[in-house]
Each structure stands twice: as structure tokens, then as C-alpha cells.
Image (cartoon, rainbow over all chains, first blue to last red; front, side):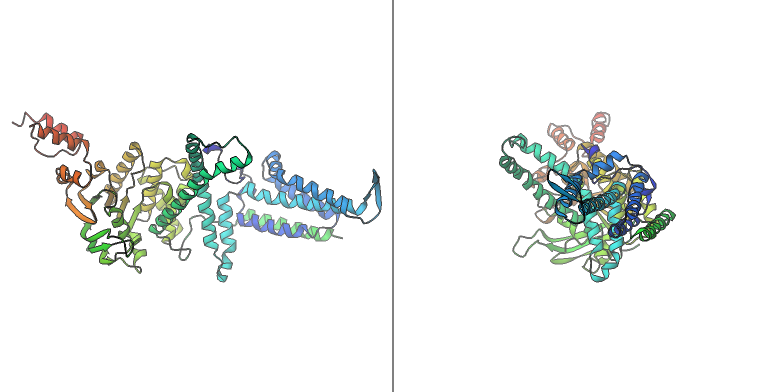
Length: 265
Length: 279
């Protein structure tokens, strides 16, 4: 059980994208999401697609895994496309299928919006595929650091995230234990109507919650005993480091932006 | 260093106003180089003592001094740097996502520089025999290994006192032995003061001094040998004695007089095979 227990979708492949500073990755994705909406010509979309697909290949992760990550959104992308085909009624009619008229604008709108959607999902999923959850946590703490001035609890948020990450496997093991214990007392999780199965979850959830609260209390006590007093005056073992690779990526991204604005209509 | 001791002066404690006293006018001193075991049945106040020692709780009456410094809300951060604690549940005191992060947690709290942390992580993991596990996640470790990591994280802050609050209670016999061995080694290497709180009487036999708690009072303070010679009284307050002590008592009852109270297998064997020859 524990060997297959992976949190998130991180796939270690050791590419240079894996080794980038997580802050770089988050920043690039943020700006990519913004500039996707500036594209309006075939060339500009081409550039963005090239960037996204190029990054995907640079991760050295097998295409199969990347597509697997996109699986839940295929439906949404297709739906958006079809919706536009039906709803948009502009431009000239380019074809008539069974008495229904297909407009030129509809085709263009449908495909550009689905393409945008696809690019966004793909690029953001590259982040979780190449960055461990704990790296993302560290990056978030750092990136939100400036907002501490406005009383934003960046450190607390990061600590909460890392403690949750640490306790997910523990609670999963516990869930398994409790479900076995309850099954041995005759609780049936597998058969019966949907309603019955939902009801069977209650004797699983109640002990799980009780123990989670107990754990939280003990953990708080242990943290205090080890001198935890909030983010103030705390040093950090894990360090983030911006290296030359990150500068190369920033450079490439600036080139991409320049290219995008040149190829816009 | 003078004043290197933990001192309780007439300490009384209760969790709430209308609740009975958990500790009643308790006074004792633990000096910096000894191993003191505190035993007692559930609710005798032994865990409360541990929590008072590093300011997780504060007494209603009396004072507690750690290295001459009074434990109060102002001094708890200093005190917690000197007094390290290992708790009972191996899972619920593991804060980091990996062994390395967990050992670093206490040091990060005390604001130590990163270079020092890296060095201390290595030495303290080596001290508990867990080197090579730095990148391991807690759910892949056994209970005993997790407790060893907990000890390493306490050591990393380099405290003067280590309190083990029933740290072996949730482990199997193998894990228990592991921890005891680790603790013994660490104490010898670093010359620490150890306070072990336990119901496991076998653990007690290796301590320098034993404090038996009963109903919030120090019922007896003596060497392990002396404590175990009072088998009947111990049983009266709900404490069991180790098998060897029981066996020795039975032997005495059967008319075989031993020269001293044996604490372990080896000592009983010694007693028995020299029984006739000393005559």
C-alpha cells in the first residue's frame, strides 16, 4: 500500500524543468496564463502551443502521463468547442449539415477557446508533474511573504500545507485500519444501495475524526515543546535557490512574449 | 556550572478550579548528570510533572526552577531549549514531511543558522543510529525508528535535560529495547540528564534514582534496588514489579536468602550460583 501512495502527481524524471526553482515555475505559469488571452492570430497561437508542447517534452515525462493528467478536462474542452459551434452565429455560412448551418466565426471561436483551455490546463499540470508538493509549499510561502505586511499568514498557510501533506499517508493508513476493524464488526462497505453505502461510511468517519482531533492536539503540544512560537525569528532548513537555469527560462519566456506581441494582429 | 538542576519547590497543580489537585505540594531536585525514573499508575501525576518541567503547564502554587531560572511565561523559550521532550505517540510528534525536516524543526524554531542545522542533523541522527534515513517519510518508518528520530530532533537542539514521557509505551518489545539502548548510549556520550516517565518497571531498573508517584505525591524516592524491595507496598498502590524481583521474593519466602535484591537476570544468576560457595 505505502509504496504506491503518492501524494499529488509528481513524477521524478530528473529533467532540468524538475530542477528549476519552484518559484520560477509558478511565476512563468502565472504570466503564461495572462498572455494566453492576448493571442489573436494563427502565428501567436502557434508560438504559445510551441512553448507549451516544448516544455512538456523538456520535462522528459512520458506523453502518456501528461495526457493522463489532462483526462478529466477533455470532456470540458470538447464541450466548449461544441457549444461555440452551436451558439455563435456570425460570419458566413461555410457548410450546412442536416439543415443546420455552420458559421465560420463559430468554428474559429470554438477552436481558439478550446485551444486556450487546453494550453492552460497543460501548462499548469506540468507544474504539479515536475514539482513535489513540499517544493510548491515552500514557493508559496516565499511568494506570499511580501503580503505578511498586510497580516497575510503566509508562514502559517505553508505550515498548514506541509503538516497536511505529512499527515495524509498517516490518516490513510488509519482509514484502512478502521475500515477493516468496522468490516470485522459487520459493517458492509461494498454492497447495498447507494444510500446504504453512504450510511456505512459514518462508522468510518466518526472514529477517523475523533482520532484526527486527538492527533492535532498532541501534535500542537509536541510542536510547542520543541519551541514552536510562530514564524517570527524562525530559520529555514530548506532553501530555494535561483540559478542560471532559472535565468535562461526567464530569458526564453521574455522572448516568447516579444514574439507573441510581434505576431499579434 | 552551578545551579544545573531542575528543582520543584512546593508545587501544586490542578487542571481546573473545581477539579481535584493532580499534584499536591511536590518538592524534589534532579541534578544535571543523573537518570531519574518517575513511575506511578495512571493519574498519579507523573505526566503532569513532565509538562510542568518545560512550561507546557504552569503550577498554581509553588515554583519550578530549571538551571536556576524560574519557569514562567517569559522564560519558557529558554527553558524549552534546555529541556527536550519525547512523547508517547511516535506519529503525533513527527512534524516534518521527511526525517531531515523533522530533525530540523526544533532548530528552525530556535532560529539556528542553516550550516549549524546541517551539521547537527548529521551528528544527532548518527547518535541514534538513523543515518541514511534523512529522506525517508514518516509512514515508511517503524514506531521505534520514529521515536529514535524524535530523540534525534531533541538532541539536535542540544538540551541539558531530556524527558521521555512514556516514550516506549506504544512500542513493541523490540522497539522498546532499541529506544532504551539508544537512550543509554546518548546519555553516556553527551552527559545528559534523563528523566524517564513510565509504567514499565523494567525500564526503571537502569535508572540512578526512582521517584514513585502516588495520588499526586512523591510516595518514595530511592534507588531502583530499594524500590523493588518494597514489592508489597508497590502492589498496594497499583504497581507491578518485574518478574525477577517477584521470583527473588518467592525464593526468599522459600527460605533461600539472597544477599541483595537482584534487578535483572544476570544479577539473579550471580546470586544463585554463588549461593553455596559463599557459605
